[in-house]
Figure 1: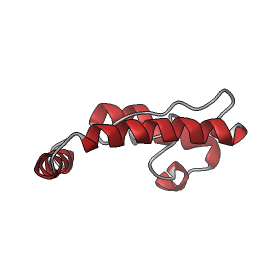
Figure 2: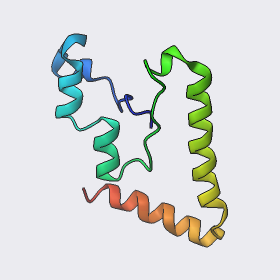
Figure 3: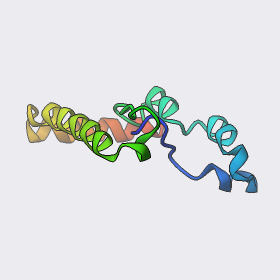
Figure 4: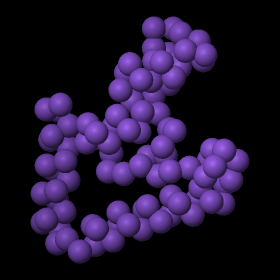
Length: 96
């Protein structure tokens, strides 16, 4: 997940405006740091200086590196290990 990304639109949280969105995102625990700590995501991809929207090429490079890393981790597993890992990952989400 991109470091400054959020999981949902916090503006919709209790009908608040965009100026209060960061507070809502924090309260709803939907920032990248929150989701990593809760075990919902596997890693945070840090954005280039100024944000992902300011340097698309660097953002794509960083996302590609992160995806390659995740795929490398998966390719050294057998199909059975992968199914078990994914099952365990998704089952633990309901126990938070």
